[in-house]
Length: 224
Ligand code: 5RP
Image 1 (cartoon, rainbow, N blue to C red):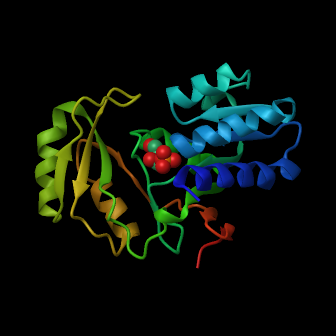
Image 2 (tube, rainbow, N blue to C red):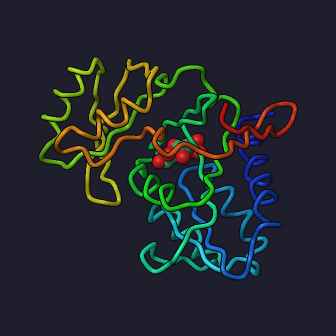
């Protein structure tokens, strides 16, 4: 199976996962990226059952609206029951690297509010140690050089993602050559650098469930 077929399989598996749990007042958090896009398209097939969504990016909000699915501002809902999103990497504890699509801050906010975070990914995303994928860091533009120097002190090679401005008006530094054996401590350490909005480690708030697309079917993983 191709990577796209595995992404399609996990998008459908996420739909089947939440469908029996949906209630009249349910709010669904929607992630960003190609796997999340496939989930949005699948969700459109049951849009009559969808009370409300909140989106982690302008791109996902407009894809939802194009399907006629209601999208709300996070501040106007009382709860988020499920958050469905992809990832760039996951370890066995379901700690993630996210932000390949530059939406990490809003993704982290929606994940923080969500009662249940269901991550959907193809099997290439499961790793032993996080950090083969460059770790995205969202930075206030004027702090870019300062933050880059601090990230070098932590042992990484930060590279400015040219031409990318986040939905929040900020820039992205991607940290290369940066294995992360202790994601919890590193998430906090990077967030403590002045000028950092947040980084793409989801260790303080990992996923609750990982639906992993494999050649032999979709596996349902919970944290080890
Ligand atoms: C966007 C993200 C995405 O979830 C991550 O990049 C995975 O994307 P894809 O589903 O396209 O592989 O964090 O900021």
